[in-house]
Image 1: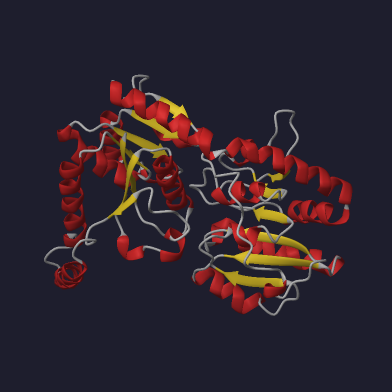
Image 2 (image 1 turned 90 degrees about the horizontal axis):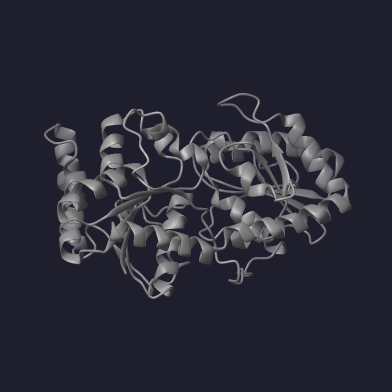
Amino acid sequence: MKILFVTPALTIGGIEVLALRLSEAFGKAAHQVILYDFMPEKQNAGLIANYDTRFFRLEYSGKEKPLWNKLLWKVNAVLYKTGLKKNFMQKSKEMHFARMLKKERPDIICSLSFHQDYLACQYAGPSGIPVVISMHGVYEYTSPEWPEKARFIYEHVKAIIYAADKNMSWYRIQPYFNNRIPAVKIYTGTNLKEPIPKSTTRADLGLSESDFIFIMVARGIKEKGWLEVISVFKKVRAAYQDTALLLVGDGSYLEDLKIQFSAEPGIVFYGTHPNSIEITALADVGLLPTYFPIETMPNVIIDYLRCSLPVIASDIAEIPQMLTLPGGEEAGYILKLLSPGTGVSEEELYLAMKQLVSDPATYKRKVQLAKEAAQKFDLHKCVNSYLEVFNKAIST
């Protein structure tokens, strides 16, 4: 099968990582795979280097003629500043995408974000190429702003894949919603058998083997709960001095926090890492008290579980289902949000962190539950489930 995956960009983020994981996995399964990047100017070379591009082809506007592409950007800047044309570069990218579709004629397109879904439906429709969209939190956030585009997508896709129940919330309340569009819930995955790199040690980070390390890996935005984690950790550290907090991410918000708190004992601002699971494997507990409105199924929680880390995270999107085992036990602690759009109780976060530090029996049990919960996210199962959807979309 010739498959075209479409992503908004290849920066460090959940959708971007998933696009690369799927492209590599389908390529290894002997499918012909193209991954189309709509914003190559934002590509993170370190992230891409973690994936074997022998199994898929990365495609984007300007790839063949980089010097010509630079000229187009200069033209775009002039047109934008003069007000003659605000979207020149965007249209140029779209035309490249349309030409690529005509040339490659994939058997199916799988798009991973709202605006790319719209473009895939717009340009693939005349060629009769089926489009499947894979939702990851963007729709419930973006659709109210672009309701006409949301409807256009719904009326032109062959199937919808979603990772969390809330992803379908916009469409379920629309008057045009019906059951003719297959909607299938599929958990994203990771290669559970792939060895985790170990080129970095605790000593490299100035941490001891005896330290009990909490880690948080996320986008560097306020809504991920960074400040709450730092505030609570200071209290934990006051009671347990062999604890440390490892913060992995970047951005202006985190830079401001670094200025405020980098001198605090036990807190390490690592910065970003193109393959953060390597750093995650050094820790003992994973944290994500997020209240980010488009949260769906955070890849970082999958990475925490893969490293056998108990997880302390907020009750948002699919996180409770990710951490809960069939018998009802949790691979960590799920904390309620105080109210929509706000974070978790710092007192509850403190109690959860304290419990794992101070109670070895509880910690050992949570580690075992994390190992079991990780099995939900087998990339092989994810690929097979996607393939079933693709085959049905092609045949209808």
